[in-house]
Image 1 (cartoon, rainbow, N blue to C red):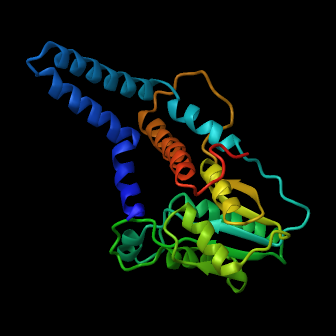
Image 2: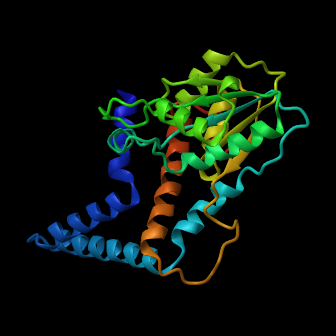
Image 3: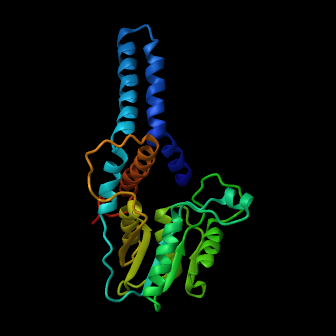
Length: 264
């Protein structure tokens, strides 16, 4: 139930949805007979417009995403016992109808896993990811899509251990730990998108993993550029990624799924 509720909550709190709700409520209140409600409606509508204009003109998404992508750098230990990669956006319905494995940002994680697998030929490999879609009925498991994709690009499947039940980052860490039983003396590399690494590191540490970050799939340079962007679609996309993580960090901390609000 908590998983489904978190997905519903995100539908409301995602930047695009929130701005639309503010604009709609503002326009509705603007038609009220009471002056105070009318004034509130005007303020809400103008604030929604201000948010849209800011995203359209400035690199707002990059500004929001940069602290997340800068939080953990790749600094592997001398000895690596295992490498774990998180799935997340495997497209079950599209894969079924297109009859080929389809994933989005996760593809870059697979490629990084392949690179690290070649660099550390003795390391165990683990994939963790099940069904992140709350209401999916496509009949194709996300883990199956990931395995097919990784096999196609050359990941050594004979070294790969697959956890296919988890639906979110908390479950990625907990379910994979139940499967692999990592020891505190072991050094693991955690592969996920750079913008997702902060919450992932906190979850895996909470679950008992001794992990070092192996971030991939950067969207920003790591610098705060001051120029105009004039790219509404791109900046809204990046802002959505960033807000999903910031809200997730707070939610996981309050739920006791992590030990730090902003881990380092």
